[in-house]
Figure 1 (tube, helix red, strand yellow):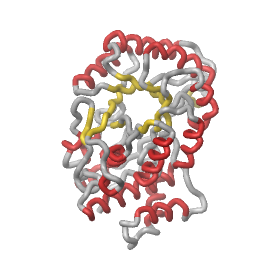
Figure 2: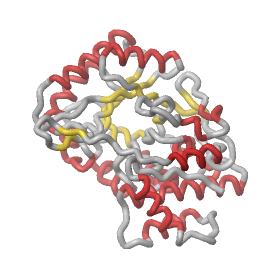
Figure 3: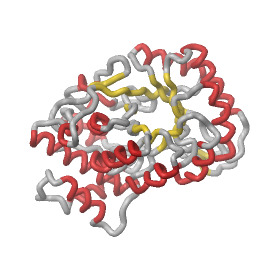
Figure 4: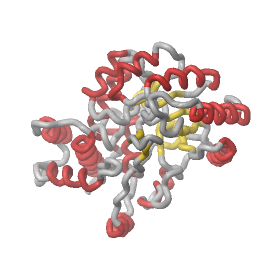
Length: 356
């Protein structure tokens, strides 16, 4: 048996239906022929791509690789080229919008050995807005640098919440604080705006969590303006597709930093890809992530020691398949509880919908 983590946050039942439909065509097939199965799932349908279908393919693909690794009693990375590193840099999410709160939260993760953190950029912003949210971010960044100096790296995630008129201002003012990268300064569908922003800043730009295939990433690489790509192995076609995306990125000298604020299966899949990708620079992970109220990363596995972070790094799993032992009893228990999470709906003061 193999494990996969197909998920679109807030659309669990929708993805489950897509998985069931795709699996009807795979039953009784040899699970080892992963490339053929991937092409059948992707090319066999007249309509393709997008978050739901690609996430369903992603989870099935992860499970197929897990099965194949267990069949050959080898970690997935040995089957896709062999590892080029033993450990991987990881970063920790830090919550808290108040300056003093964020300092305390960063201290906690630094004490655990992390040397790179990622923070939220802003809350909701209209096309033209006051400088209040911008001032709050600048205040936080100034306090972080005053307290920690340049001893820690800081990524800033804007979640595509900012529109181009305000993004221009934000990026300019952030340069003095030397962020490691800015993530999704605009939505990926406004890519022409990202190209324009990139021409006016030296801060590395990261994006990719809302792109779902190598064809979505093609224009990103051709533009030459994105420095870090963040494909999600539970959204962008699994290990098979993200291996190809990572290779494309290397040809353009673009760093790989897989998106993964998810569970242990997704993280294990990411680390298998990181192991074989020379341009893998840093890995997101969700241990203790600020918006989790229960069911943390380690709750679902019997060998939590494989995600034992030391000095801001984690060892590449060496067990067969994905390298994790899923706690089936806990999974079944939580299935009975159910999962019906939906992201908040934000509105501006005029009651129009805001980006979350």
